[in-house]
Length: 319
Length: 319
Image (cartoon, rainbow over all chains, first blue to last red):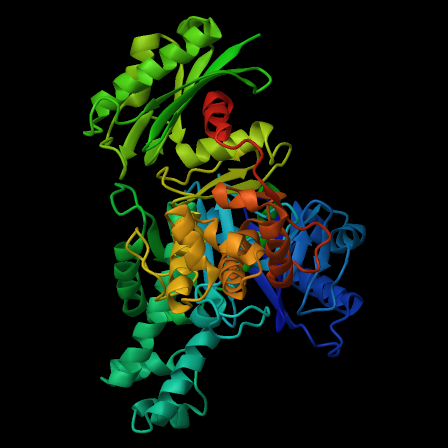
């Protein structure tokens, strides 16, 4: 049995896992990204990464260099050829030679890619996109992350900054996005976008139970509108309908461009399952350009959860 | 010297050319698609295609089977593996085995692809995208056609219906598009979209010279607003600014997804040259997600004109 180490660098946690040939995670470690201070300077984060790797291997009862390789998924623009994180908004990672630094430390091959690419690759090698030739994986979280698999390989773009499907405008002059543009897919289809729509609907409809649910839960979340909808609230229903409208718009755009065998959606809001998926599929089917095709894209929910990033990173050696 | 035959099937003309190893068109033929009636039935169009091939070869003073191959670019969903046009809105071409039929007639290998893909491949093999690894070619005509080159190959999607960048929504609930959606990139950035904006501005501003130009030319075209703008008309300027705004929005979307080395734009409106290109590049540079990248996409105007479709089709054997 061969082992591969996968590291998933996030703004909150650095998660690491030892993965076997069958893409099973056999041990895990997780360290708060800011556990050694809030600077998030590269050298400090690097120390945390090294500790996470060491702990995961200890738990798996292997030495780090018993593993075949280490794969790292990092936020930002990751040059997978040079192993350098070129730009990163969340961490102070600009021009960080993470591959060379980890290879120096552990003496085994290290592979680097963007975290959304790694997660998509995880779903492709052993999750909801397994067996597809072309697949797109979209994660509806705080933002909208995306990874594109073409012909079994991660598509990175010529400058390794490709795949930013979340930052394609679907509503020109629309809601402000964190990237500076207005009307991005992310501004509507992220959990953040759903929360914004829910809060607005609650304000505009003081009698909606949306407001009671917010009070009870102590905050408005991506679940709030769905809870209200399930309780029969027409305002909740209107918010979830609006959310699905924008989500279907962006997903139809992706299908019209890529026509992948499989398009996977992940992230907390997908815990709604069929309540989200059924109207989404119906809305997309009505809009896609390939209505007459015998083989249209299957829309499915990601199956690996948070492990996608670890498994995909661990398998980067073959990406 | 080896020869390759390229056929570009359009709603108006069927154009054919004999192309040499250096991607030069050494002879051409062009037949009106409806020259044998308006039915546009597959068998009738097939006869026109055969005549066009025979004439182009006669002019080049070669026999058809002296050529290495025939490549055909057709509208619609073209299955490049089976050589069948699966769906086609413009011509009655559904499930037409064009490859097998032409191979039976001419006894040389035949390759089939979508016309926008063929034109993009033409720009890639010998035009404005030559030498790029990843490129996107967008044609601003009656509609917005697009072809995507990834790793030197045409990207077709799993069901051969991919690449419909013109049918990605940039303005949710916006202008009606021919595909049934509202707010597609095509509805704003095609010549048709520009004409619609120009007519509307003319109506709303009866004193604008837009109306004089329309009268003088006998119609409103994609040139009308640019003519007015160049003559100092603020309404003309506002229309061209609006057009560039939408065009930049769609092109930025494409760059954020693909980050190609080169993005080529073609079609009649590109005859405006720098007057279109300069403000377009400025608007895109302000919006793209990869502002910090040292290697951003170069936006250029297609260089092959109508020959792109013929050259690309002729070179399909290596796509």
